[in-house]
Amino acid sequence: MKNKMQAAVVARFGEPLLFEEWDIPVPGPGQVLVRTEACGVCHTDVHAWRGDWPLKPVLPFIPGHEGIGLVVAMGPGVTSVKEGDRVGVPWLYSACGHCEYCLSAWETVCAEAQFGGYTRHGGFAEYILANPDYVARIPAGLIAAEAAPIICAGVTTYKGIKETGAKPGQWIAISGIGGLGHLAIQYAAAMGLYVCAIDPDNAKLAHARRLGASLTINAADRDAVEQVRRGTGGGAHGVLITAPSLVAFKQGVAMTRKLGTCVLVGLPPGEFPTPLFDVVANCITIRGSFVGTRQDMAEALAFAAAGRVKAEIERQPLSAINDVLTRLEQGKVASRVVIDFAGM
Ligand code: NAD
Ligand code: ZN
Ligand code: ZN
Image (spheres, helix red, strand yellow):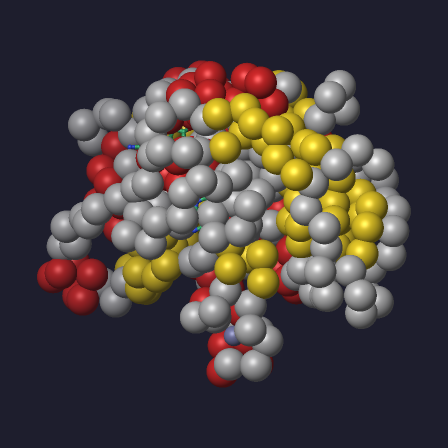
C-alpha cells in the first residue's frame, strides 16, 4: 500500500482548499482505516470552511462527513468491523459512551462528541481514520455514492421528521429543498405524511413535486406563510427547516399549526426573531435537532437499501471541491454533489 494520500485541506477559513499529499494515517488502538470511495458535500462543509460557527475547527483540517469506503486496516483491539466491510464515517465521529446522554441513546449531544470533517479529519481525502463503534454500516446493495448523502442529509432529516411528531395523514412543511430537503421529502412521503415544500428556487420546487410533495410554495412570495397556512388547512403539523437562511426560520415558526412542532435543522450563523405571543398562545414547540443516533442511522440507511428513498447525486472529482463549495453556497447545487474517488 502506498503511504501518501491526496487530501483537500482548509488551511485558512474562507480561502480555497489546498490539494496536498498527506501521510496515510496509521490506525491506533481502537481505530480503523477506511479507503474512501465517495464523500458527499454538505452545506455544513461550507460553514466549516467559512468558520461560521462559535466552535471552530482547528486549522488545517480535512472537511467531509459523508465519506463511504472500505475498511482496509485495523488498529489493535478492533473486533466490531473487519477488513473489507463497507462503512460510512459520519458527522458523529465518536462520543464518550458513558455520560447521561450516551446512556440514554442521545449520543449526538455528548459533550465529548467528536465531529467528522470538523474536529477530526474527514472524507475529502483518499483515506479516513474512523472509530469502528460509530461508523455507519452500509447495507449490501447500496452503492457508495448513493449511500454517502444518507449518512448526513438522510439521517438528519429522517430524525428531524420524527422529532416533529407529525403522524401519517398529517402535513409536514419542509423549508429548503437542497441536499437535506430532497431526501426529507422522500422520507416524509414514505412515512405517510403530506408534504408541503418551500424554497425560493422554482426549479427546486418542480423537483420537489416529482419527489412526492403535494404542495409547493415559493419562499420569496410575500404571502408564502399565508399560502402554506391555507394549503394545509391551518398550518403544518410538523415543520422541518433545512434552509441555511435566517428568514426561513421566522417563516417556519409562522407556518406551524396550533400544537405543532417546528424542528430547526439548518445552521446559518445568527439568531432569528420569534413571535412570542403566537408561540405561547398556539402552544407551538420549537426544537433543535442534530444529525441522528446510530440507531437512527441504521433506520435511515434501511429506507435507502429498500429503495424507498434515493439520493439524487452529481458526481465530481476531488479536484472540483472549491467550485462545488462555491456553488453550494450560492444555492446552485440541485440535490447533492458526491466526490467520487473511483478515478483517483
Ligand atoms: P443545500 O445548500 O444543499 O440546500 C439548502 C436549500 O435551502 C437550497 O435548496 C436553497 O435554495 C434553500 N433556501 C435558501 N434560502 C431559503 C429560504 N429563505 N427559504 C427556504 N429555502 C431556502 O444545503 P444542505 O446540505 O441541505 O444543508 C442545509 C443546512 O442544514 C445547512 O445550514 C447545514 O449546515 C445544515 N445541517 C444541519 C444538520 C443538523 O444536524 N442539524 C445536518 C446537516 C446539515
Ligand atoms: Zn452534513
Ligand atoms: Zn457521552
